[in-house]
Image 1 (spheres, rainbow, N blue to C red):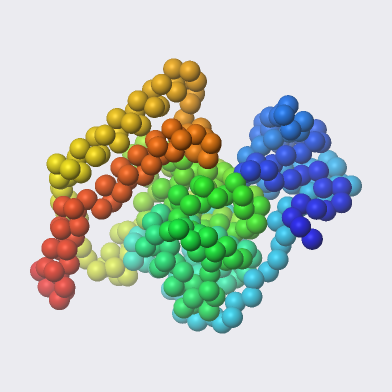
Image 2: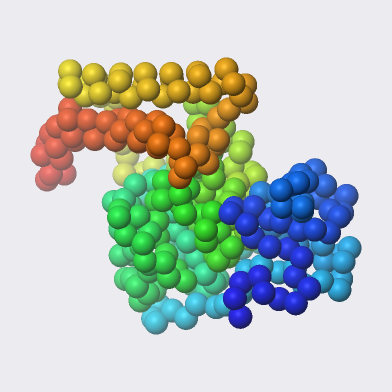
Length: 339
């Protein structure tokens, strides 16, 4: 049976939002706006759980469930036992099935997530910040659960009941398949609250959401949005406990790197393109944001040009020539484990 084909089904998924004709009960009225074009009430898909519950309570004769609830079969499970801290993290998340796990890098956040996937065999989408991590997740799922996950990103669109993707690809495609996955896993979830990337969570009905990060705090203070997009922090493992126990003793040293003249020129040009476009749009629409820019991507060549400039800036930041050279020097220096 196709999605949303249930008889007396007033609630439907539409391009990252929920649409329904029934008068919204008081508990969800603040989420909803009347859409004259659709002749229906509309709200962000992430409010699915609250909307489903409120409509069921108020209109018991209607079926309002959207996710299909189909289970996933793991071909095999090769999961190592969790340490006490990892088990505590898993149990803390299982209580609400929403929320963020804050654990230092190297303490096994991915292993906890794989145990959660095994415990909850539902349609799952893992969202990683970059392509390399996307492929690492694909391999870990293959190794630990014996499942050949789909890949959505890096010029590939192979959607499976369990798939891996990047934040950028999730923002592009979630409006189309945001009703299909019940569990979202956001790796390095401190990236999510950005003006564009938050769409990856906002346009999905997934009732179960897991965020993984070592550093939830952001310089712009937008980490507070994680409560809405994923859920609150449900477990925090302090670095002081991990250092010298699970992690080796270490020191933090900052190494400044600089852009080449070519990189700096391209970076400045991209910044200028973005600033000029956003400035002009804000003159016409004072509340214009990157979310609006993202929505215009498919129909506006100018919006595509600006987003391409934005991604080009990020690419320079991530892969600057000097940054790669410094990393190579560090790997060569410490390849034997000695300073």
